Image 1 (tube, helix red, strand yellow):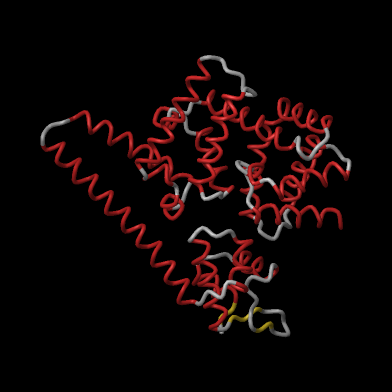
Image 2 (cartoon, rainbow, N blue to C red):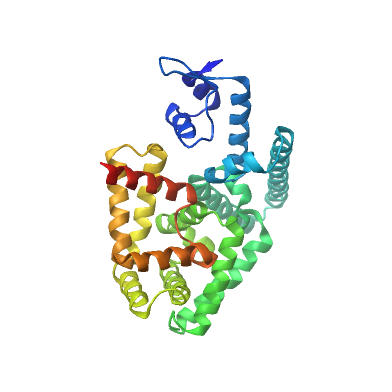
Length: 339
């Protein structure tokens, strides 16, 4: 059997992460000694391999336990999925090889303009790699799929056109383009809120990305306003007019506070998965205050808000937090109330 420190070292995880897995029932040690030490059997290690494999395949931690308990997937099936993902990476490497071969041929012919284009692509890839793992990059279609990039370029051009015409974000034309934007974003990130949030961070923090994608800081703000209008229309199906108007005022006055807060929550979630540090309590308190500035304190309003969020997938696009992070926040907030 392995002690928790030994298993953490072999798996490349922290002891705190294995404690978290134990707390949420995802990976329980076979033996706990009288002194409180966790000991892991071969079957526990096999389960951890499956957990890590599913995480690499992009499955949220909150879904893995349910998947392993109810899907009937065998270790063989999970390894087969890993092999398929590895094959995708091999295919991507083959595409890169083809690009480099073509670049070599152009350079051999002395065709310098293509070199500039290629370097721009490499610079863009370098920026992406600052924010995403190799596995995540393999799943981001806008990075390696030429048809997808062309589709985004066409949409960005259309949005640029209505911006130049000073079309209001609440207009029908703007909302139609905004809905296309949201649909493509959901499709090309697999609906992963964390990936969407990091894409947003990259566009905020990396001015060089604006030139390669055509999405300027002004366009990002414009699209955010359009998405806000689309979501307000959806909220209006569940909330009273006065409640929707409160959300609109919040969006205009404090809407830009959400992104840095999501970034702080994500960083603290990774640093403190058990949610016991004072910094975790601080970001949870900040989120609590900002949320109630948006929807108020009325339990009925909050109930309708949560119902809308559960029933309307559109409201979760660009939300900035995945289910795992939300569960972590609830845990931190609950510990605050208990204290």
